[in-house]
Length: 207
Image (tube, rainbow, N blue to C red; front, side, top):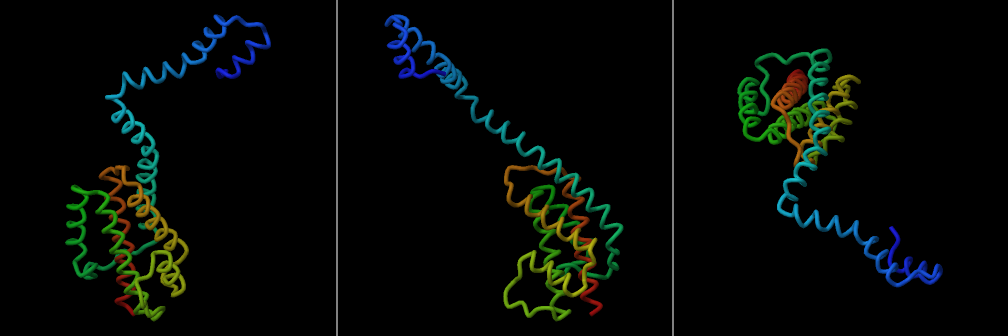
């Protein structure tokens, strides 16, 4: 789009009449003016439009989360043995904890994902302490916990990959506040997280 100064130069360079000059200015401003007019007309709908665009932006993340959660369930069945029924997680029986997380997921799916991950962290800290890997003067971050578990030969390569995927999905759920997750995706995440936690908790009990 040619601006008014550009048109003025054209006017002086091509002997354009002042009438033609003003006509060109009006023409050059017509498109931006049209945009402003449309925005004014739709001003009441703009918040809803913005929400729709945001929803579309997060749709891929939601679908990817569901796909990854399903993949992790399949991997845990192959790479993580189930803990015996008497193994407790965070001071609760496995059935009690599952019931509590399912109830949370019905009201706040994101919170259920975070709670499930915290159970994994608690089990990881416990087994690392019993293994004597670290004195834990402060609560270690997830990546350091992972390194401790690998250092102590508590996770093989496949199990390490599951731990890392659980951590990444937890981060996505927490840091993308506007994303929504299906019940199946949350249930799959909870199942995998608790199987990882049960495995680590049983390892700690055996030390």
